[in-house]
Length: 279
Image (cartoon, rainbow, N blue to C red; front, side):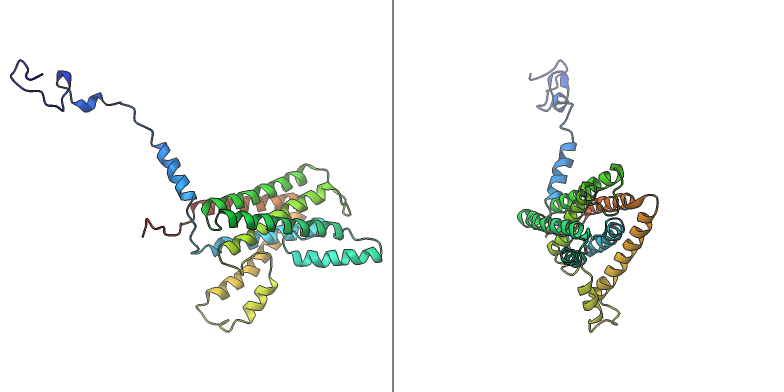
């Protein structure tokens, strides 16, 4: 159409009746939520920054103290500190010669065995999918939380076991919690904080007090080594108090599961390593 009755010419931007052409565009646009999903997927593929990541690993010491103190109170076996379990297994094997056979042979043996199996799987999971990738850390700690929740459900709803029982109500929770405990140690290797395994203190005590810069004000390694046993002690006191309360070992397990959930959220929002696009 070249002109109107008033002698004006319709521009290409105008449609019929002189209405702007963009009015004919679809009113409904693609929702922006897809962008959020894509952005979240991209962020999950980032590698997390090591800066201050030792804080999460130090929090793992609280969980270790909580679980080990409550498990030794209830079952007479550790779920994280496998040095103690190895000694208990040795004493149990000795009791085969000098009966009665100690129930710790079976309980500590189960814990030690499943800790080793867990180390095998968690290490290969991290190694195969990239050790520091965000989604790998989130899935790892979420799996640890689920294993503790499964153990807590069993202890909460199963009939109370006798002090010398070696049935599934004791052995299965021990196996589940021991299996997940090594995930913390594997994460310390993945993030290159090899000293913060959360399952060993002897070497930390040795390294702490043999440090030539022990009394230097600015000493980050000393601070980490000092914090680790203190935080484990806090967890152990908490676990002892909870396991002797009406909540029992089940209460300690639920608190540990909540702590793991906090770590899952922390890894999800943890800063990323700078990517090539950011540089």
